[in-house]
Image (cartoon, rainbow, N blue to C red; front, side, top):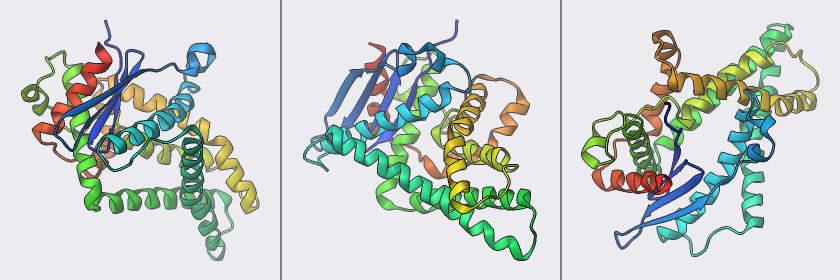
Length: 283
């Protein structure tokens, strides 16, 4: 019988895990103690089962993960002593809107605007769309590389590695101990980093044959079709996470390689935090 799927996210000085109808965020406090916050979580797909269908569930999962992730980051910043209070609902909504606008500007508006300079070389709209897609991919990779060099992000990436190792240990049905967790790799096929890379690649093919209308129509079409792209990418990453097919493993290698930038080997204290988080959702 297949084990319930558990996902996670690195936060400030901690790890968030989601599974078994719960979300748990464990954070190492300045005192050295581990603070754990546990909440039940209910997906909108439970109210509207149609949203559980393949290619629809991906967009739902992506948006809900964004909301839960920001809430966990807010809690971790407070528990780690970096913020005095958590975000209010209004501040949370503002943060989400800002993040979405920033992503649209960086990964949609800039690439589609820059691709127009190919007019001197060709008038083929397919070439324009492909060039836009590859430019979007390059911007994404440069962005990941840039943040991976930031000193403050290094510890977050260590916790990211601890999250992956702990989930691997859980999936292998081994007791959640530091020694067991340390044996596993820090690169996981269901990682959000790999998912975003697949989104970028899928978008190249989805947008390739949309023609080349005015700039505002191009931006609007990309935004409207984003749920379609996310749905396809989600099904790919979900299948890759459970498949034993060597060809599938070969296809997802770029996503795993990218995790060399977004994860670091954790120390024992970080693994302890990840274990506490996963144990909390299992209780």
